[in-house]
Image (tube, rainbow, N blue to C red; front, side):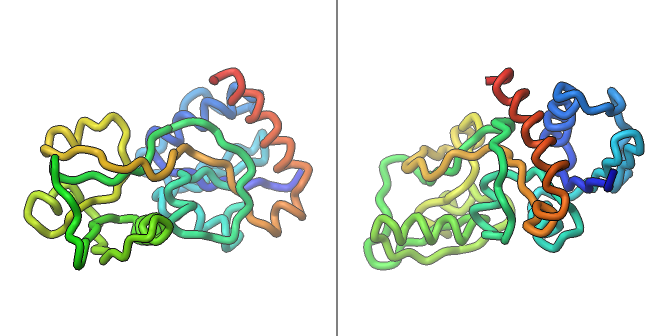
Length: 210
C-alpha cells in the first residue's frame, strides 16, 4: 500500500478532522503529541500527517508535497490554487463579511477596504459594481475603521463578538466558510483508490455530524 501524505493545520481543525478520521474507521492513536512535531507518521495506516499553517496547506497540496489536505474555504477562495476540492467537512464553520462603524457609508470617491483577503474582497466589490481601494493587513483588521484607515473591513466572522467589542457592525455577508478536503491533481490520479476511499469514509462521518 502506498503512503498517503495529508497536510493539515494545527489546532482545532486538526483535532476535529483527526477525530473524524477515527470515526471513519482509520486505525489512529486516540491522542497524538504534536506540540513541537511538524510530521506525524502512522505506519499502521501508511499515513503521514504534515502539520502546517492554514495558509500553507493548499501550497503543499498544489506542489505535491502532500497528496491531500484540509483547508478552509477562505484560504481556497483567496489563493485560487490548482487543487481538487473533494468534500465539505462542515467543521470550523464561519463566514466572511464586511463590517464597519455603525451608521456610516463608504466614501463615494475612493472607498477603502482593509482586509487580509484582498482577492476575495476585490472580487466581491467588483461583482457588485463597486470600485474600491484594497488595503492589505495581516492583523488587528478591526482597528482600520476606528482610526480612519478604511471605510470597511472584510474578515472572517465566527460569533461576531470581536466586531461588537470593537464597536463595529456587519454590513454584507460575502461567503460561507468551512473546512474542505482537497487533493493534488496528480495524486488524485495516481492514488485514486486510496483518496476516494478516504473521502467516502469521511463523507459518512459528515452526515452523522450534520
